[in-house]
Structure formats: structure tokens, C-alpha cells
Length: 321
Image (tube, rainbow, N blue to C red; front, side, top):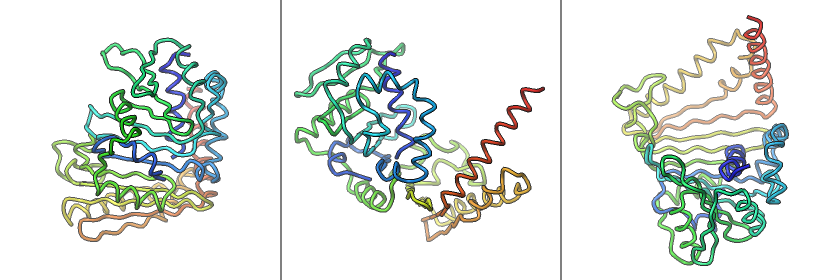
């Protein structure tokens, strides 16, 4: 197992287990435009989170060397994740902040034993730097700041996080900080963007018509979303549009997809999805568009089961051709 694969094993777990610990935010990159976070403990204690952990067991063989070599098992030791990016399309720089239980010496020894990695002492903290790839770019670096916090990301951002740890103030914009506090306080998983979609590389450049299936890059100036786990999974979101008209058009996009799901209700695998779509609430207030969904975990489980059966059926039909 090489160093890149080792990091991939860890990072692959992050999207599965998405609040905002002030100690982590003090390490934030300067001027982030996108921040996402996860209260992992709450996610793991929910039925949905437990299902994800159960599904990971099928992939445990690929992780076993990493788990035994480092003593770190994200399914057990990870408590919180905060991911941030400067949001520059195609040239973005990202930083991942992890709170958990880390054996720094064991992890560092394991990483160096894999080869293709060098250690750099920066202001008293060891940073593990992988070799540059074919394009001359250096992949994700990692530093264990202490037994409870780890940092992954572009080497320059990891060094900057260490600067913050040693006293340099984090340059987190006031507006972004307020949004992070608001959405992390009421959600277990959350996402905040203070940048237009155009800067994030999302949307359809050059097409200024907001119609179902197409969101022009200038239409959405900010976006945020959150999820609360439990017996009922609550999903909510908000978009700030460039005009009242665009906000209403965004709402119409969601209403269109809800209607499209209903039109396919005759398909057996679509019945649970229709129930989920029917719980969608969409509203506008000036330039703000909001939406919410409340889905019983049991209903979501039925949807995934029906989808899995449909995929298996389609796969079998394709194999018999």
C-alpha cells in the first residue's frame, strides 16, 4: 500500500460521515469560500450512520493494512470533520480538519514505512509530504497536530494551519463565520458557500436562462444546506439569488423535479422516491429560496433497498443479453 492509497482510504470515509468546533475553526485557511462539516458522533449514532458503517465492512480488506498499521479506525476514532476550500474553479485548494483520537508517532512511522513520503519539521510539528506527481503537483500532505487534531490538504495550507495553532489568527470572514455557526448549530452535517456558483465551477457558463436542468453560474450568489440525523432525517437548504425573479426560478426548478418524480410513480422502484419527493417544501422570500425535506429513516431505507433491487435486476438483464 503506497502513501497515496493510504490517504485515499481515509478520505474515502469523509463524505460518509459528515458541527463546528472552535478549535478546528481556529486552524481555518485564509478566506475560505466553501466550508462543510460533520458531527461524526451524531451521524454514527443514527440509524442512517449505522447503515453506512455496516456497508463499510464489505470494503474492510482494503483498509485493514492501514487500520492495523496506524491504530486509527475512522469508524471508531473520528469525531468531527471540517472541510474547506477557496472555491477557485479547477485550481481550488482544500484543507481537511479532523478531530478524533490519533497516535501521532504510530501514524507517522507507518506513513514513512510505505515510502514515497518525506517528513518535514515545521515549527515543531512533523508534516508528511508525498512525492510530486507526474504533473509536478504535490498531493495531500498530513500533519498530526496533537493526539486529537489532524490536518490534511495542500502543503502550504497545512503549514498555515500550524501557524494558526502557534498563535497566528485565522482570517475567517465574519459573514462566513456567522453562517458556519448558524448552520452547524442546528445540523449534524452542514455546508456553507459564500461564493457564486461561477467561482465554484458549478453551473453552465454562457447560458443565462434558468430553466429545469440548467442553473446559470450567476444566478446563485450563496448557498447553504444541512442535515439532521435521527429516526426522521431532516434536510434543509437556502440559496441567495441575484434577484427575486431568479429565486422564484430556482424554486421552480425544484418543483419541476418533484413533478417529474411523480410522473414516474408507476415504476415499482419509484414509489418510495415519490413519498420522499412529496415531503419537499419550497418557498421564496425576495432573493432567498429555501427548501426542506423530512424523511423517516425507515422510508429512506426502503428507497435504497428498492433502488438496489432495481439495479441488480437491470444488471442481470444486461448480462443475459
